[in-house]
Image (cartoon, rainbow, N blue to C red; front, side, top):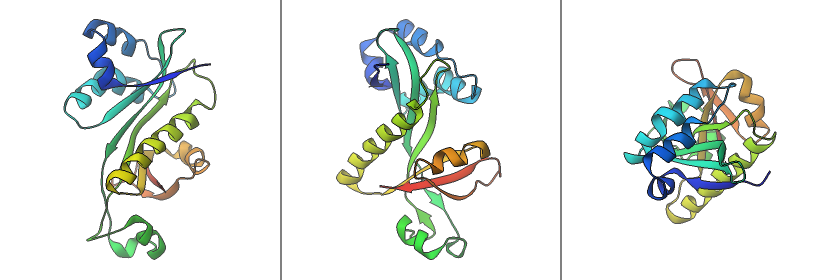
Length: 175
């Protein structure tokens, strides 16, 4: 399947609101309804408020979104004694805070080919690597459910800890 990746803000300039809304509302992800809801209800608001940037992976032949990922900045706070010293060094931990890029959302449509998630992760990391060259920061983090830990480990992420609510796992990789 041939796909094209487009930044949501660019599509907002190129398409009228009705057309863009139709494109987003056509996205179906039965594995993760929260990710489906985010794309349909929140992504445009975050884009307009400069909270995050969403990238849509589109099948141009079908004119549909087959996946998307959202990128942002979000620091992690730690008690230094709670972090392995080698990991703290990689994180550039300063005053118990680690600067980080964030993969806030990553989802593929029900029709998407297996392996497309890995491609989106690679694209996200390339985008962050450009940022690293321009203004620094080497840690990329994400939060995931328990059943996705092994998947993200296979994509070179390391488990850091559970989040404060204990419902998601904070994971990180370094670029």
